[in-house]
Image (spheres, rainbow, N blue to C red):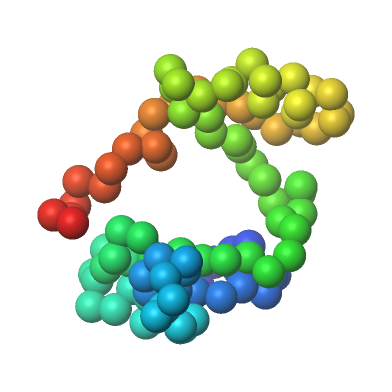
Length: 101
């Protein structure tokens, strides 16, 4: 199994929206439940990182296109001296089509 950012950080998994009052934390296996693909069963399942994500672990920043402020994000990245690509894409900002919820 490949090493992931989750192997290096403390986190909690939630099988449902973490903001719900009745959602306890769970294991990553419970978060995916009977799902046999790359997505959890609930479209609002969440992994909450309990600390800052190291800059070295950030490979790319996706900005919603055409709606996101890509120039603002690019300026922040450039001003901080980081060499992280900023990519305009709507792919990660759409509704999951694999569920009827």
